[in-house]
Length: 426
Image 1 (tube, rainbow, N blue to C red):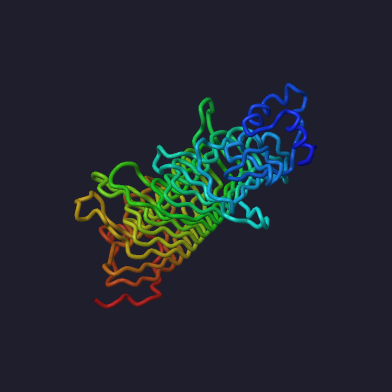
Image 2: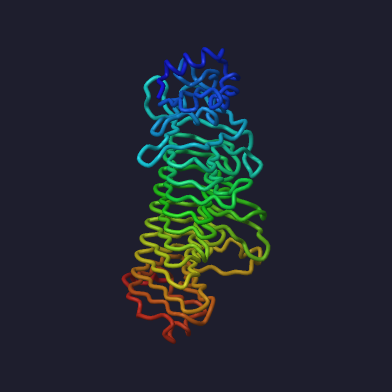
């Protein structure tokens, strides 16, 4: 191990400048010095040094090379009080720490050392906008915190190779295409993540989505995050939080998604707050909220789905349940909103939409329904399966089971609802 002084002396012998540091680092292995490691790298917007101190701070784009020489448990400190960081090239992270010794990349006040959001700005949003941090194979056991991203493309963070133990906390964002992207890079068969946490990340003006997680990614937690989408006129489908492929064992806790809309989306308008797919499994939504989507608030196709204490409001279909087994407990559906009605969209609003094809087994307990126009409570897409309801609180001008009332009376809906609220008068 070498300390900051030793690193400075080493680079001085090599006639250090910012350019020579970047050129020299790949040669260190040839010089027999590949084992040199440092504890801390300092970065400022105008840095041109080797990162050994604030006085000799490195540039933001030097992180790609300098992190190769950061020991497990080390830190990259980004001076948030020195100005904003213009992102020109993606920062590729190819090395991390090890179990219980994460590498931490974070914004700080250089004067006090206190956490502070470091502003990182791109030159445009949309899918052509820049990425910021790209994690490739080798970037396991890494943690990022205290960044504020503006005008960014498909990924303030992008996982492009198989990694494990990734944590992102305390970030803000505005005018971005997607905050967290999971797409394999060239030559990679997949980019699965084993163990990840996104916590306290919030922002607005999100075009495509807050996150997309796929491949065999597993063992994840998204907690205390929020994103407000922008309205898309036709075009690509926006989803606040999207799971795909075989992602599994993922929990959302106190996550709020709002305003992910696809207006004028031909015959059917898409746009969801949360979505998961048929090959996803063991997905949990705890105390989450979805509002203002042109399709589903929660559009869930996964196996063994659990929703607890969730609220869906102002979506076309507040809860869309497709999987063969799901449990909804203490959930609330308010005021579905059919935005495509005047455009003759081929759809209809409802509080709960059941789409499983066969052998569905849906268990709903303590459901609260509230609206002002007696929107259908449940709609079924197929004729088979069982939905059990135990306890319903309804505030509505009238009780409306929609076109499926006969099916409900024929015991597809098992268990007589217990109405805990008086139906409002017209």
